[in-house]
Image 1 (cartoon, one colour):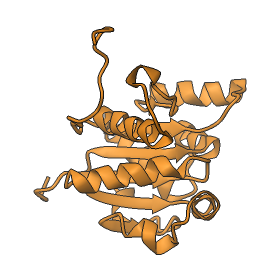
Image 2: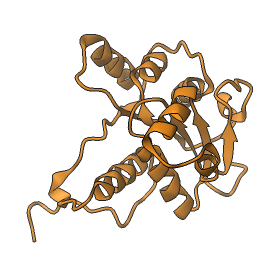
Image 3: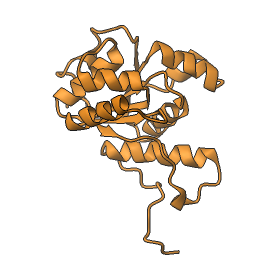
Image 4: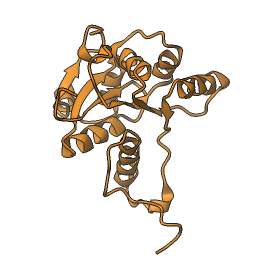
Length: 192
């Protein structure tokens, strides 16, 4: 890769659930993975509504940060090597752009580039209930190689706090990108 550290792109769109993107960034920092962050304009709005984080607090969690309109950024080119991208949370608008390949922002362009380069793309789609258009877009994105991972809690881990649920989901998404999370609780077939 030209760079000795593994790189992963993290996109944060405007859907509810920005805590997932924050936790993923925290875990990537702990794993010493180089992070490239792009937050949509509505992602910044959600940050203000759902957290006490200032914009600078969020961007300080990443190694490199891009403006959502910077279509000339490194992550908009396939020649810039990464392990892939996680969009957490992923709005249905971002999903639709990724599924169609018609992108209007750096966030969706970066995901499109990862897909065309056959790199892993994990989308934590945050919407419910879903109509047929949402489901068709999920299928289209999946057919192009994306992994649709709605952040659905795993209760076999017996979470005690919301933090436990968020942490498990973040670790699961990272493992889907090939980043080992040794402390993630695992199903043991009902063994105690």
